[in-house]
Amino acid sequence: MKSPKKVFVLENGSYTEITYEELCHRKQTDVSYADKLFIFLHGMLMEVTEEAYRDFYRAKRRQKYIVERSRKNGDFSYDMLTTDDFNGEDIIVDDSEPLDEQVVRKIMVDKLRCAMFILSENEQELIREIFFEELSERTLAEKYGVSQVAIHKRKVKILNKLKKLIEN
Image 1 (tube, rainbow, N blue to C red):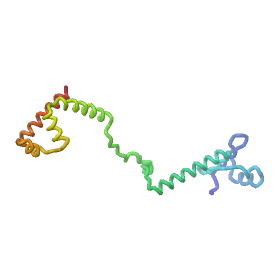
Image 2 (tube, rainbow, N blue to C red):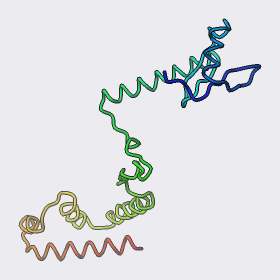
Image 3 (tube, rainbow, N blue to C red):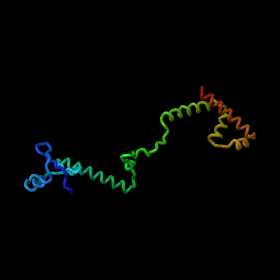
């Protein structure tokens, strides 16, 4: 252990600053110093109670365990990237949809769902086949025995009808 810059001892319930040499002298001449507990912290040696000493080293052991476990598991923390010039948190991309956009989308989906029930069964079937089953207009034209242009015009007409239903 390096010799500390400062030493603080408890005297009459408060801390008194002494030199490291004075502490060494007291340990040699005063038998009560054999039982005193000190913590080396930020370059200083500080006398503490037994409970504070235990808590300090328990927390230190816990932190060491967490670091070792993280190293073993290959954990990575964006805090490790934080410097004076850069906040590691800034590299995390939040690609979740903003709440206001989620609300608008939910309202629009609900309106669309209600509007779909207003369509005829044939219109609902065509929309389902195009947008949910992802069948091409050409495939549907063959299925219904009409031209692809006819399917396309029908789709546009239904979508315009849905748009009007949703806007009202």
